[in-house]
Image (cartoon, rainbow, N blue to C red; front, side):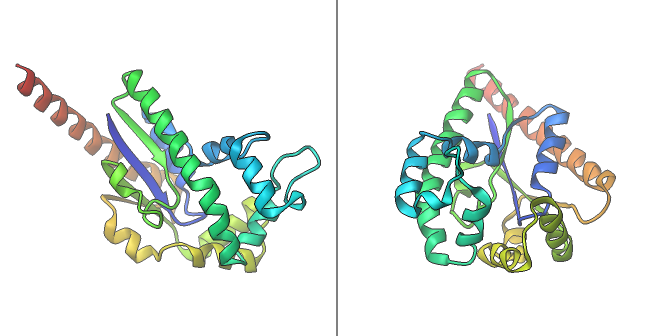
Length: 211
């Protein structure tokens, strides 16, 4: 099974690109969905977060107040490190479990959204990487419109991530999501065709080995 990581800056359009690959037939794992699952009420990470940060970072129904937590951790690097130490190992474990399940189901290719792929040193766990990028002003406007974040919080988010030029230097494929969605889709389809060729090549190698 070919494992492809999709990464990029906040507000760059990673989820949009992930959905496009899903429409083309790829199995997908959404990192945001996984992160929400691991901090669901009663989960071990939920318990650890309550002990580390206090009940004031949780809603009345017990759920993590993600907006309030984000406001804290992107203003306080120490708090961000504590949060990452609690969540990242469990997110990685859950992603691996989902990948194993997809492999048992016979998936030939799976796309995984991994926002901090390079920052967390996770690239070796994947066969290829795709970096999605957009102009910084587009990132800021999207984060403001989508999440209602203020400029200080957005600045903290962008500062906490690896510079774009470093991500682009490490990427196997690049998607420029600064323009219209039709342009993004064209780029995605080109990458998809290349990945299909890789899968066919790998299958051919397996046939030769077993024959």
